[in-house]
Length: 396
Image 1 (cartoon, helix red, strand yellow):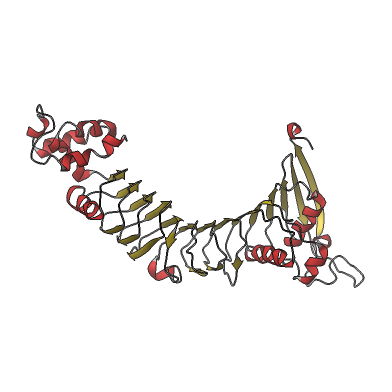
Image 2 (tube, helix red, strand yellow):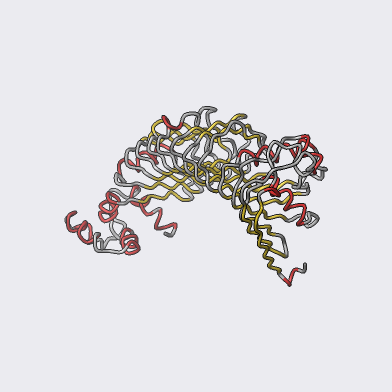
C-alpha cells in the first residue's frame, strides 16, 4: 500500500465537514449499499475508492482488519487509541512503522490480534491490555530503551523483542500464568536484559536467542520445546535447563577477540553444548579466531564427553586451520553415538554415516577413554560410510 493510501484516513479525519471531491456522489448512497459494493471489490480497488468519498472511507474503515501507521511524524499516542476505537472498530492488525514523536504507547483493545512496532525511535514505554493479542513484534533502533508492560496478553502465541527494550526480571519466570499459550519466543539485541534470564513454560515450542550484548545466565524449563536457536558473539551460561524433548538445536558463534583460547573458553563451549545434548539434531556454526576443538589435555581438566548426544550433528566452520581429523575427534567427544555427521568448510562438505552396536568391554590398559565415565565411540562403531563433495572453484 502506498503512503497516500495508508494515510488516507488522516485526510478523512481532517475533512469531516466537507467532501474532498465536489463530485462525490458515492456519499449519497445508503450505507448498506456501500457495504454490498465493498464485498465485491478487490483490496486495491477499495483503497483507490477511499480517496474519492468520505462516506466510503467511513464505511470501509468500520470493516477494515489491517491498520498501518507509517512515517506519521505528528501522530501522538492519544490519537492512535482514538482512531482505533472510534474509526476502525474491526481492526485486528496494527503496524507502527517509523513513527517518531510517539513516546508512550498505551493500547487497550479487545479486537487486536497482531501488533508490530518497528523503528519508532522516540518510543519510551509500551503498555498493552489486549486480551486477544496473539502476535507481538518489536523491532528497531530507539534513542533509549523501551519499557514494556504486558498487562493482559494471555492469548499471546508469538513474541519477538529485537532492539533496546527493558522487561521485568520475572516476565518469563512463570509463562503458564502470564502467557499460557505462548509457543514462539525471540529475544535479542538489548543491553538491558536481566542478568539471569529464566524462562519457564509448558507451551513453548520455539526459542530464539541472539546478540544479547552482555553475559547472561540462562535457565530454560520447557518440556514441550522442539527447536532452540542461539546466535551470539558471547557464550552465555546455560544452567539447570530442562528441555528433554527438543529436536533441533542451532548454535552460531561469531567471536573475534584476537586472544588465544584458554580453559575458561573451552569450559564455556562444553557447558553450552551440554545444555543442548537432548537434541536429536545439532547444527553448530562457527566464525571465530578461537579454536573450536578442545585439546586432549583440556578435556581431562573439564569433564567427560556428553554421554547421550545428538544423533545428527552438522558443523559449519570458517577456520581453515582446523583439520578434519581434529574436528571429527571433537565431534565424537561431544556426541559419541552420533549417526550422521556433516562438516561444512569453505571448499568441501564431508558427510559421515555411522552405525553403532552394543558397547564392547574396555580394558584398563585401553587409553582412549580409560579416564572417562562413558566409553567413547570406538567401542560401539560397527559400520561407517564417508562421502566428500568438493567445490573446485575454491580449491581444496
